[in-house]
Length: 152
Image 1 (tube, helix red, strand yellow):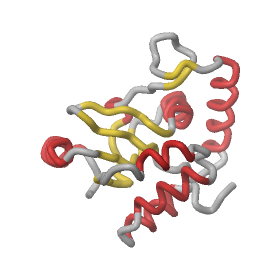
Image 2 (tube, helix red, strand yellow):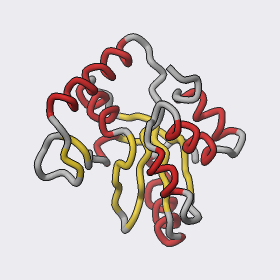
Image 3 (tube, one colour):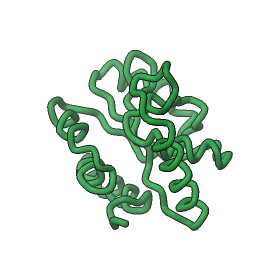
Image 4 (tube, helix red, strand yellow):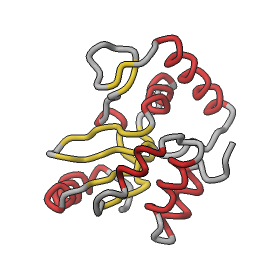
């Protein structure tokens, strides 16, 4: 397991005002999503977090269900989720989920398997990193969700 791929390390980067660096390091390492990292670099983004929020606000966009944006094999999905559950039960310092906020709604852009594992473990709140492209969306998020989160 990579040292970068932990909540502790993400919080450390946040406290040093380098959360964007953590995101790209994570996505190039255990996050294994270099195309997403490269896409994030195409525009200026606002980043908030890690902050703790209710998982009930989010839903997966990736999984075996036919109605999802990204449909993947059920066997692989279940195997990955169960492996994450086992790691979590053994004390894994799970990295935050990465979520896009646009047009007053959320899209879980990295961490669909982690999200499902947390849900199955009956975890109600977890740390997330929000990324936002438009200033209007950023301002709406700050004004609307400030009371639901840990300190920004």
